[in-house]
Image 1 (tube, rainbow, N blue to C red):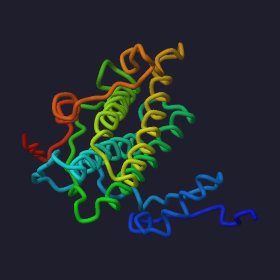
Image 2 (image 1 turned 120 degrees about the horizontal axis):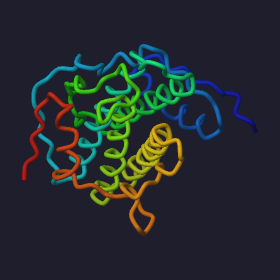
Image 3 (image 1 turned 90 degrees about the horizontal axis):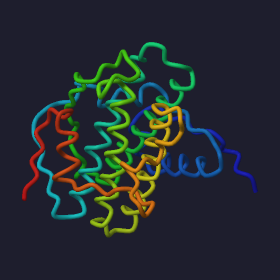
Length: 237
């Protein structure tokens, strides 16, 4: 029998974190339904509004790697929230829609990880996006799409590198689903930057075996995102 609940309206982060709402959202997504995410959902963790402080990231256990993913999603959500709030000059309707969709995904990723972590969720990170010129589409490494490319490529590699440390089926499945969506983000951003259409799976991110690169947390991922995070993140050796 056809499911008549074709739309779910999400007004707040609390709604998204409620199990019934998440089930409705996932079921409707599978059936081609619509999730309406209202502006209130995007008020959390806005650029430079989160509190600072410090956080210890213990990568000696599964929870630590989920916290690491949660920190990444907080940063990505903050970036796309800022990008959509202040569109760059000459942005097209298609680009506006793409960035808004990615923003929605990143907020959901952030809150999904917060929900699965519960009391172990990473406190709101303070971020600094001042090195990104939100007024321009692309400009060496400082334009909006340049930054988006870096965040997405890093995010995909980060999940690939962390996957082997996740042993709980529910958590591994969630990480895998997020990683696949991040890869879609990376591909569309690369397509926007390269009109030839050949960069979506460039050899800088896909190896000779046709596999995505896996990045090391300590030596590759954290150094890449460190300039954008104000909150001190300590990673015990």
